Length: 211
Image 1 (cartoon, rainbow, N blue to C red):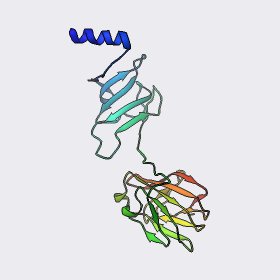
Image 2: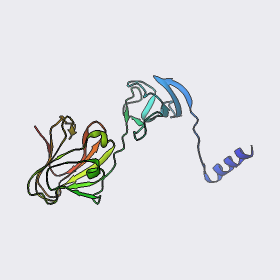
Image 3: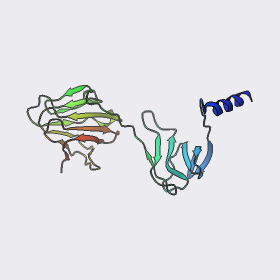
Image 4: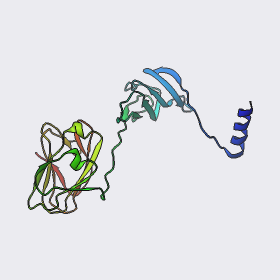
């Protein structure tokens, strides 16, 4: 009782709670889950488990969090309900590393095949290029969950491509088709690899996909 008395005293005096431990309660809401928190309407706010709740299931608040406890190392295990309380849709929240404009510079003045060592987390430029260049991207297996920036320091076109792999821009991606950064100094593209494809997650200037 002494511990409880101290807790209640501190809470009443300073509203201070040093730690909250969630043990969870096992419930089945389309799948077996450990429920950690619910809202005043008895909708699930936070839960965890091995299987993502089935789309369309009722009982999860808008914005509810699901933690996939067996997610592999280096892979996000955090999902959010982007559906509604009567029909959930849990979407994986992926961490996209940000690449600073002051990141290590990897200058490419000719067409080349990039590797993780020459682009991962770096600012790839076309410094010294006398004409347009084609940069072949690294194999996706070597770039999973890695970002890099391609920035023009010379007014020459830069194309990015990788055979049999898509580079997505605005939801459009066709395997083997190049992504083109227009020949204007300062244009750039921030690229993220999810282990399957490359995605443009930010850019400045004009970017186009090969027809």
